[in-house]
Image (cartoon, rainbow, N blue to C red; front, side):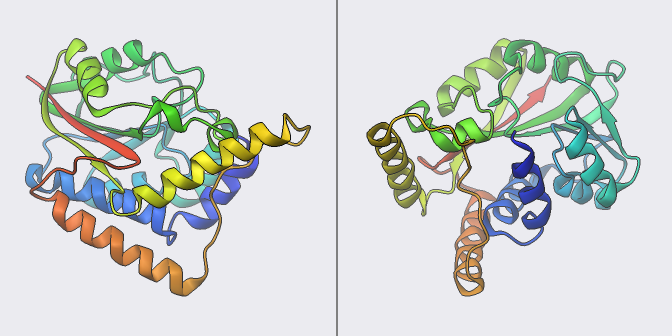
Length: 248
């Protein structure tokens, strides 16, 4: 990601509707599995908000490669963060009860098949892998370049990738469904405007920004409703795809 995106993430992810909603959705999908047997690993931990949530529930460790992200995350979680690559995890076999990956497979430089194989290796038998990632390849645009994104996923395609790595699919759903029409329209408009203007010299910027407080509260309400639904039901569309797999 561009350095400014890590700075934005650190500043916003504790109360911004998008980041908070993602963590609520993760908690909803994991609720039925609690208590998790074994330590939790958060791969691509970014600036540390999800890892901080994991640490409240038991032993946990994060993995991140970007030095700026690590320095920011350590202000939240201290030393519970290692530097490394997802396709060569510095962890022993069968050591974890849960692995989470939030928008990691999406990024440039990530070997998807090798990363999933490493997740399978480090999980205990019966352990779980939770993957959240960006949906719909047709939405690739300026936001994705700022985030150094390389690919987006459909639910079926992401499930197939986990199955090939040896996982049994437990849940597969989309999220951010109620707001999906507005987000999709915004992304398609950004692509059209960029094509109209032609390539520029400035660095690309993501869609991430601090909304007005009233709007943020409203959107947090939407995220809360979706998280409640996800406790027991799947969603058929959305701008993020979420898959929960088990190592048998």
